[in-house]
Length: 270
Length: 339
Ligand SMILES: Nc1ncnc2c1ncn2[C@@H]1O[C@H](COP(=O)(O)OP(=O)(O)O)[C@@H](O)[C@H]1O
Ligand SMILES: [Mg+2]
Image (tube, rainbow over all chains, first blue to last red; front, side, top):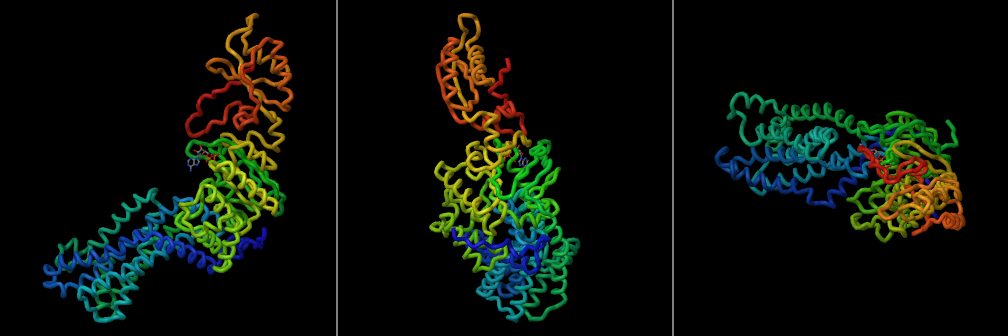
């Protein structure tokens, strides 16, 4: 046999902790794996491809006339709404897939390697940003096809990034559900319970003014509403208002609360 | 800390609910040796390996791997071991190459180095032709080889192999044995589990027999075989009694005891009685037959075979090697007759 021996990984000093750089490259390797899986099983992408197309068509023609008088007038309202709703819904998959992944044999190998415990989790979350990118792009393109004419190209790009960041933040909630729940089906159940009120009880489809007081109160504090407003303003004028700050703040709070929870739950099993 | 032991475990315990899956296991594995953990399904082999490989936290006892405590220094332990689990621990969605490159990168190799290492291992394990094929088309043997290759990327000094040949056809099994021998020749320490006595016999320098979470015997293959004999003689004698009123089975039992010096295990059959006794030398069969003839016992069937795990177990524990789960084991079908 002609194998050159290589001394056990330089990334692991005797103390057994990984440097930040090593951790990052391990997370990237895991993200690479996630991307291969996405490429291998394109049927996984049904939600990020079909939903943007279907929802933009459906909601625009269904509500356009009734809510804004005409379809063209409704587009600046509905496209940001659908963008946020679709991309955020996509973040749910992270938790389900994480759960499925952790039940597989290969996970034992990850756990037996001297890698940072966080790497598989971080890699999964990183790879899923590709899904957000696809959903974002498709929704914007569908909007443009239907006649949406945003006022600022830069604003649209920034909106896309903002939405993707917020979806990534929310995916920590679902990652937490993923590491805590026992089965993938229950992760899905929990995730829907979180997502439905957040995305539908928002100003995505209708102006909040039309709602009864108690509902309006919820819609107004719902961070998703702030995100949608931020995207509407950004794409229309290219200026970031305080709504952007509220959305970022909401996202940050979610990360600060759920990332440690998810990591801890994950470490307990990993 | 320096030690000549690759593994030292003291009183390892793992409890699942009220099932003491591992119930005080001690192991000492010398560096550079192959250590076999032999036991039936459900004995606690996998659970023991998982604790030693830092995949499961022991509920009691201590263990060190190459001087590092598995609970307090898990990362140090992980950097010294390769684990090939009982169920393939490779990614089904990735090709063989992608799997090895992924693990290589996780171990700190650059992309290029990981690809080189992967190609080298695939060559070594005769998988080059299948490098790009999806794993779902892999046979059991190919999967096992890939799994083993993945454990060797960092050339770890200690390798765990959990039932490396279970479910493989005989030819693939022999190939796997060769691979394991080669690893050892290169200086790795191997801890393997198996349900097959001959596998432990072929590969292991020392063997621990484990049963219901406990080590019931430990020693070299020869030590073990001495306790059961290197062969087992099976005789079937008819039902009924001899003219002097002594049951045939009882007379046969006495004759065997006289020649072999050991109690035979008696199994009642529908139309006769089977006696099983360990033999050190095949030549002793002739003496047994002569003695039976003298006692007027008719022998209907005779077989001489290598002792099975079941017989080892019987000899060591007094019960057969039936799988043990949370449920009570079924009543043993064999009885040791002490009369
Ligand atoms: N994760 C688990 N949860 C509950 N019981 C388990 C678990 N893993 C193993 N067991 C039980 O522990 C005992 C030992 O199992 P195992 O170590 O897999 O045995 P072996 O590998 O020797 O076949 C069995 O009774 C099995 O049912
Ligand atoms: Mg097992």
